Length: 161
Image 1 (spheres, one colour):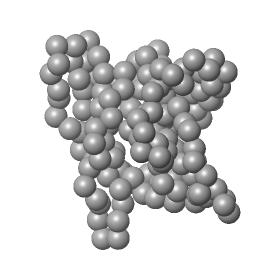
Image 2 (spheres, helix red, strand yellow):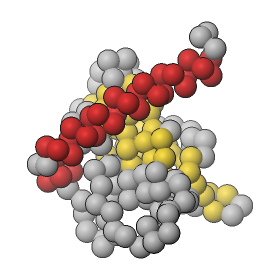
Image 3 (cartoon, helix red, strand yellow):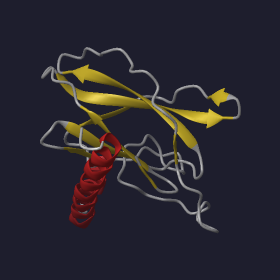
Image 4 (tube, one colour):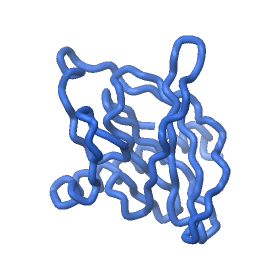
């Protein structure tokens, strides 16, 4: 997991079943003493701007427009081309966005991540944001760097096993 004050980038292994063409993610916000209700599911596929799929079928996804300094747990499920859905996964371990620098929390952030609505309550269009080719390149560059960091971290955690 890579965290910023307003975004979380996470990865997961895609399933081998080729009928799964997209995924949905829902988040649970951490509250004192437990987890809040799940959010509305957010749909994403290989063509989503906030998604990169590695050659090993590892999905790297950025969720943005989150609250600063907040714990989240995620659940995923697969979507088939024919409209079927799989069961929700178990809830992930907690992952936290970073605390905002002074004054940062009040700023409205327009992101490129998987999200449902921006701070003003309007629907975000990922395809409209894709028109800015500079953003796409920087997301790709970031994803490549993140993949290298994740690979190193996994190697260190498993001691090469």
